[in-house]
Structure formats: structure tokens, C-alpha cells
Image (cartoon, rainbow, N blue to C red; front, top):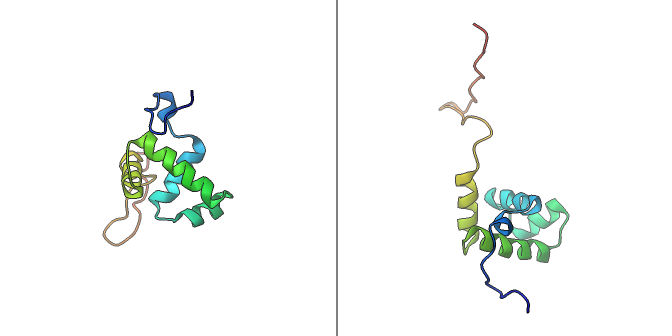
Amino acid sequence: MGLMPHAPLTVSAAVPTPREQAILALVARGLDDKTIAAHLGLTHGSVRNRLTTLYRKLGVTSRTAAALTTAASTPPIHPPPDESGKLPRPKSSCA
């Protein structure tokens, strides 16, 4: 007996794989499936299948919800730019 199409995932299975994380990061940047496929060297169908799996893992039903989930859980790499658009300089640890 195989898995039911919408069977709940176990905790370990609910963690996105590194490839799924890469796809999700590109979705969060606004790329479409075909562009993601070309960027990662996958077929369009593979990206769609992995996104379906990701939606189940994240408990969402849309691309936007997946992107928002990712954006909300990903810390920024660097501080946001100031009002002039410049990145703040790192603080010196020397006194």
C-alpha cells in the first residue's frame, strides 16, 4: 500500500532538502518555474513537482504563501540600506 496523495508528512520528511531550499529561495526572489529550472539545470516538470512537495512540507497552498514563509524565516544577510540607499559600514571592534 503506497502513500496517500495528501498523507501527513513526518517531522523529518517535512524539512526541505537542499535542492528544495534552493528552489524556494528562487521562488522568494520572484522567479518563475521555467527560469528556476534553467538556473538549476532541472526540467520544468521537476521544479513543479518539487514545489508541490514543498507546499505540503510548509503547509501552504500557494506560491505566494511559500515565498512569504521563506522570507519570514530567513534572516537578512546584511543590514538593510539606509535612507540614501547605502549599506551601513561594519562597526569596528577596535577601540
